[in-house]
Length: 65
Image (tube, rainbow, N blue to C red):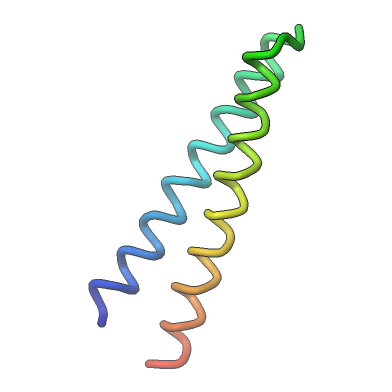
């Protein structure tokens, strides 16, 4: 169980890092072509999954301990 919780928190942290790096990349290159719009949409999707994984991991940790 502890390994699963660690996996959720680690995956959430990695997805959150990917979201921030993609959004900073998009901000650096301010032109908005089709490729950058797709990267922005995938960054928001990564961010959504990151928040879900982090909330699940932290709440499961609170319930167990």
